[in-house]
Image (cartoon, rainbow, N blue to C red):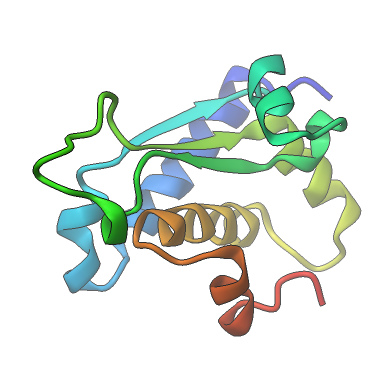
Amino acid sequence: MDPSAADLIEIETIARETIAALPVAFRPAADQVMLRVEPWPTPQMLRDLGIDDPASLTGLYEGIPMTEKSVSDPAPFPDTVWLFAGPILTELDERDGVTLAELVAHVTVHEFAHHFGWSDEDISTIDRWWE
């Protein structure tokens, strides 16, 4: 399923609302991250991650987590959270009782958690989304 321009706008709107609703202590750091909403991940992203099915990658954090940043070794590119509308909409179709807003908020928070230094294992201790 190829997402429409309206889908991209709606997902970005939900993501930005989610970021704005983060706890106050996290907002300054979140404001330093670029948000990108694209229809699908690029083939290079999938290769780099060893992912065969593009529909399985709903979001991606690219950057250096805050817990690893150093003023003596600045990052060459801005930290970026990518949200992929096609995979998000595919997952939405596969889940009963989950709204687009809930799914986008989940993916957004998950990717920003990586920016804050959380691993997938750390995130899974408080977010049992797959259950």
